[in-house]
Length: 394
Image (cartoon, rainbow, N blue to C red; front, top):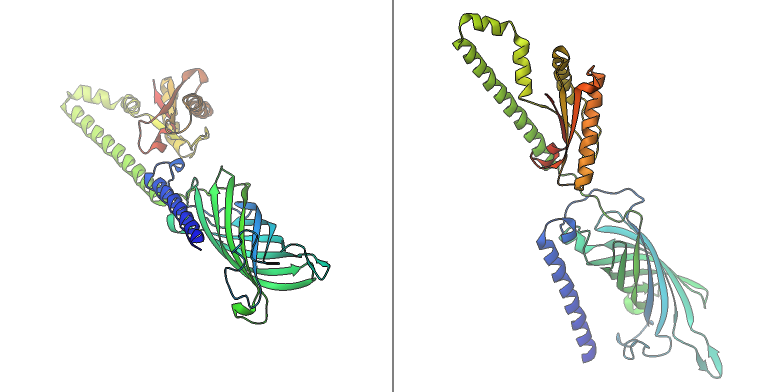
């Protein structure tokens, strides 16, 4: 008995060590590879499926069994004929959220071994069960989802049907247990599962119902899409919208300040010079536009203009260029936080070419458009603002 207690304490210590390691990863923060936990969106029905295969050891308690340790006192053989047996199990299931899932499990085994009674050889009984289980991933429910988590603690409850193939009899059963999964790779995990089944008997009391204890070891394989997508950061999007408004307000303030400076400059000039300036408003407009390039924005990794509204300002600049025969310079950018340097350089050129193509549609000759690929930059905040192309008069 002391040996069994020592084994249980050792297993508990190992489990505590794994939990401590998992908590350390959570504390680190950073990107997903270092254990960042985050909220997720619900995936499609065909995502987050898995299959499992286990080798099982079964200990059987008959009706009226007096001692709970009867099948174990000669572990793993068991304490008598018909008490234990080996088998296998197969399951297929799906996680509907990182914390809640369902699985259908088939378990087949034989109870005991051959033995003689009065010169007659008695074969062991053969069984199979089919159970539907509701899975609760307590690790994800309590600590939050982490794609790289090493260990998951998953209790389950369920019910199903069992058949004794030898006696050709069916019965219903209730089941509960704990599934432990240990991550081996992106799709593969090791299983250690402890379960308990209670079969249909002569009443609801446990002493009147045959009981089965199972210990299973095997593998879980994830099918198709096996991770959970990060939920949109609504607060971040709101902050970005506010940042855009702040940027527009800042541009408006700069324009008003420039207008005030020009008015003051005109008031200080002799009358004849003031009239000359008033007769040439187009020249003032060109000078002002040169100081403020027009931006056209793009989505992550794309060279398609995100909003056609950005082209309204480009059209005004194109009109000035046509009237004065000016050359336009289009500079493409990518954000340096994503992608490689070569990829960002190519993407920035594609964005510059996309805006140049729009300018040609606006009546600007292609030989009066220069394109520049600036590659990945981090000059603007938030980082999304760097996914753009600028247009200015040369």
